[in-house]
Length: 171
Image 1 (cartoon, rainbow, N blue to C red):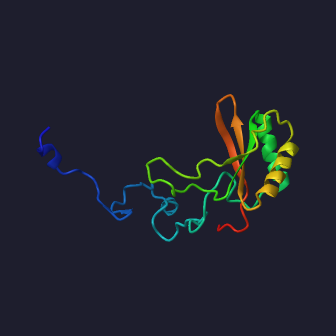
Image 2 (image 1 turned 60 degrees about the horizontal axis):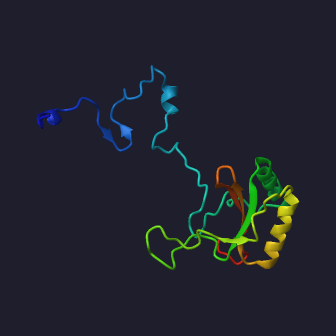
Image 3 (image 1 turned 60 degrees about the vertical axis):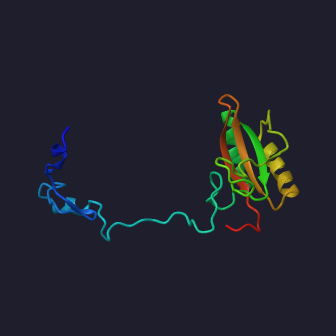
């Protein structure tokens, strides 16, 4: 290809900002109503703030909701058990991924939390998991606690949600 093929002018209309200079970019077929429904950068377009990123840590699934009740936790655990997954509890004092011991690429502290006892193989009822949650909360009242579900057929973690945030933690 020669440089002349790139230097030739391209037919079309130019854009200024987010609005086009061309009125035929989106043909309206004579309907003024249709033009009013098009999203633009004007004042009719609104965005909704869904999460405050300032001093707010993201945790597992459902962590943006208020603390889960025992009934809600039991329903989540029943879902795990119905799927054939193995429930497991973990806890951590800090509760989020950080880099304090090494700056090496790919290394993060807090990626893995401490396991509370062993995974609950053979668990058949959510009340058994709730009992373990109470014991973990009693032993570590100022720790983050989460419930995990492991799928032994796919050899992976299938689900996780936060059960407890410490009272003294900064949101």
